[in-house]
Each structure stands twice: as structure tokens, then as C-alpha cells.
Amino acid sequence: MHDLDAPDVEQTASVVPEDQASEMVCRREVITGTKMSRRVCRHRADIEAREARGQDALRGMRKSGSQMERERTVISN
Image (cartoon, rainbow, N blue to C red):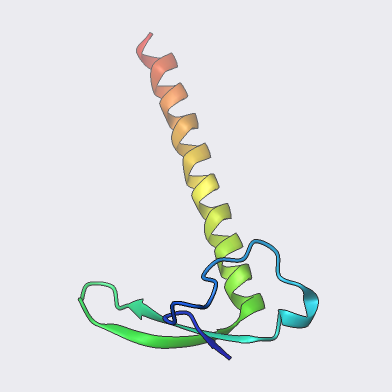
């Protein structure tokens, strides 16, 4: 298990080898709406999956936002 608060632990990984996917990774996460944080431990594969879903959601919001802007431009012209 790695603690990402430790300065000697790499904090980012783009591709996780299969043998490391089940590795537990712990880090401090700020609780939304507070200045408090808590220690959260997850499997590396779960972290990667969450990040991918977040990126997909962000791309979807950007895409629908740009579509709305194009529709607004067409309507106003």
C-alpha cells in the first residue's frame, strides 16, 4: 500500500500495469465544503476508472455546451 501524501511516492500514473491494478493507494482528500480532509484508500484500478468517467463526463458537458452555443448563434442570426 502506498500513501500519496509521502513525498517519495509518484502521484500520477497514466497507464497501470495489470499486476499493479489491485494495489491499494491511499491519499488525503478534502471534504467538499470544508477545510477538513480524510484519508481514502482505493484500488489503483478503481482510481483509474473514476478518473476516466470524470473525463468522459467533462467532455460530454463541453460538447453539449458548444452545441448550445452554436444553436444560440443560429437562432440570433
